[in-house]
Length: 383
Image (cartoon, rainbow, N blue to C red; front, side, top):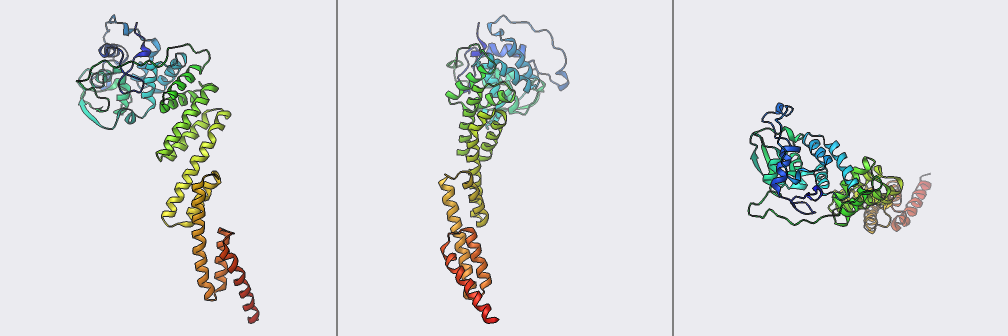
């Protein structure tokens, strides 16, 4: 019997198709993904009995068939819940992970931006089209999301369907692809143990985003143990670093906030320093924007916020000091103009402002007492 956990498709990091695509296509079309109607209202009509084909691949686990039916009818959250239970019970279940990836990843990121278009023929299903165009019927749900179709079963004949070029089958390429099993299936002893094991496997293989999506969904549903939370934090930390390197600071901060909300306090404490660092980077970026716009006081305020969060950030410390110096020098130059014109009140106010910005600014320390003393003498003469 062919184990459905080892069925893979092209384009995924873990490997390719290990079985004959046409057989899987047939069982999906006749089983999980029903032939699609030519009119929307036909989706609920009973179909004719389907002859069961005696083929080993028909023996998919009942829960996987349930997942396919749920996805086909647009019940994504329910399908994700079942898939998490499957992975928890059978760590490394490749088919479950593939379907989870289609649910959790952005379809454009998964399948690419460039595409061709085809017209759906009467009686065609998304699984049949995915099998023909992408080489794997199991991409039916990713293809649905790629085309903003919420209920795959309700595809209508005549629809213009986008087919991503990134996964489109090259007719000159051989059908057989190398199979690289992820992990022999084992039985998890405690709830969450299998999810933690799978997350660690994904993380060790550099598949940070997939590990993160899997464990974050598990944590939200309350199905992750303490060990799984630690792995989730590791995956989240790695992903947040990637987002920061790409300049997507807000996304990195949002990710860390999500993690803090769904894990217990010990795990949350591991990621909180990362939150402070990303927030300081956001403050620093805002400071640069204000500085480039010529708004020095606002720029200094942002740089000071960054330093307050990350006192060891030499870049923020240096930038704050430079802007502070630039501000007090400008104030001092204005104060000198008033001082030389004997507008002592204005000069005194400006040097006080300079010292409020930088109490170690030496010119203000020297000139302010002089200006105050001269102001006092002038008042005595007036009296």
